Length: 130
Image (cartoon, rainbow, N blue to C red; front, side, top):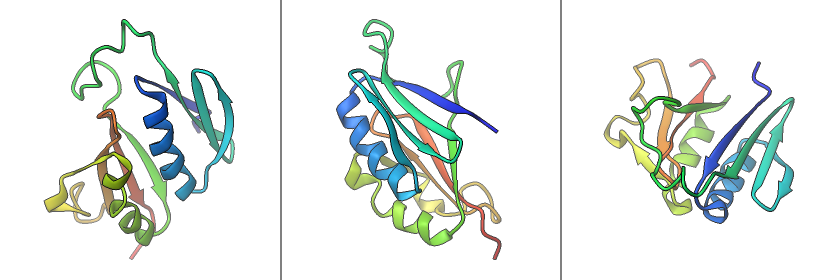
């Protein structure tokens, strides 16, 4: 079990708006907030975004470099994946693999792939069996 994840961002306000919406939809609640960061918690896990060093975050996130490929959040219902897929772009994200939605990860993997407002790749997986 993960305890928490802390992601550096460039634009805290834009990212806070996006992640507040997304994580609240998944049942997270705001946990902590300070001048350069914010966190949301669900159960024993919490998700943190904070402003990174201005010199080191000048370049945007780029999938394929050393480090994180993507994060995958889980939800029980396919309906939740579908509902959030309709709202990602309105909140500043970008849908990935739209022509293969919701099976871009395979015929038994019901998921939404998207980039957050700063381009970090994310996934939302439905865990319910059909």
